[in-house]
Length: 109
Image (cartoon, rainbow, N blue to C red; front, side, top):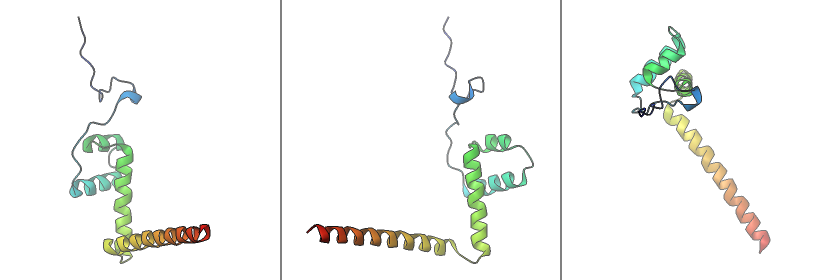
């Protein structure tokens, strides 16, 4: 008599051996609803995560991104402005790295 394998998301398994079931990405509307559910706390986080099929970490990351977007909007900064500032910082870091490499190469010659 053989036994069928237990699926990995089976609650009968020890916690370490369980994993979240793969699902499609959440839509923006689902992310907003999830963030609001987490913020309102009208039901336990475990229930919210099970409903949206996400981990606690993902739920908190979506909530934090939602709050950060709200802060930027209230400050009058658009998403484009935010991205532009991030890209400018990346370009400045790369320019500094190139300059340092040139200086090191010049002293080696």
